Image (tube, rainbow, N blue to C red; front, side, top):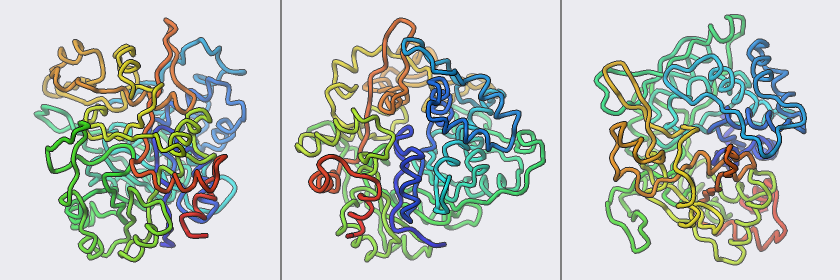
Length: 469
């Protein structure tokens, strides 16, 4: 492999947009699109009229015409919907997706990767969350139809992904094991590419797979068997944005944040001994730290925050400027919130007054779960599955077998993250969703860039800075 020095992290819901990934890729590094909720993103952009025409241009290249036509017919609104009108929903992900769900999942991921790869020969990756298991097979297939070069996955143990990619490259059926609470039998998210494509497509390129892990023990576990062995690792530390691996200690500091210690740090010598390339992530966004990573044996670094705040990211200008101003003034604080995420994993939440990080904004939001990307499957009876989310109404969650303790402090990440990229839902009663933002907690590189570029920086300028140019 021609290994990049810098991997641009796959952040949020389209914060790592195709625009950003394309610029990073054109600069010779690995641009990565976020693979979270791309069905929702494309459906809502189409309902807003797709003023640039980019999405419809990408869909015109989708190799399965009937599926492309169904997506356009269902979601595209010429001139865009009235701003007061709610978006029509996309089907919620489940173990048994219907045709509408499959259509928008496959096409949505194709669109984002196609646009990121358009017009250059650089490498492009897509980042998936292991916790969103039920969407993974069809999302990965859509990305591979667009020729994605790398797949990255964290927030869990992605043991089956190498086999999934092998099978999808040959358009073969695959059943991905899915975690189901209280299960008495095994459950799977299944895909049959032949049914989707009609059996008329040539074999697909099998992308490289990078497993995002925090511990050398997990890296060694994945490496020990050919069926689970990735092509490389991203070793992510606790300062990285988004979801973090829970610390081994149960200790909580004075701010209510989990305490990470030496036992939570990967042994890089043991990772290096596995013989696979690896990159370091979390607080690695200065030239000195990039060089330090390389000297430790890493191929380079994965970086999120400085790219999330650049002009090419998916953040709307308002939210991007709000975060950059807070960093420039050194007033922005990013909390490792142990309760916010419905997954139960610690989650980095930027503390901004207008967002749900503000307790009054959080309490004013009606509890509901209508997107469901982070909801959990549970067994209602053998072979029958239900779904619950600790951020849904408390009485509903308890009726589904959940505990009231699990609902404490939970935020709706799905809806909150969509607001910051300009596609937040407006409810029929007039309520507009409140935003939520995540960044890494080490803001050193971003602070230096605010000094170099007070009016903002591009992805290329961020790369040049980190490479010491």
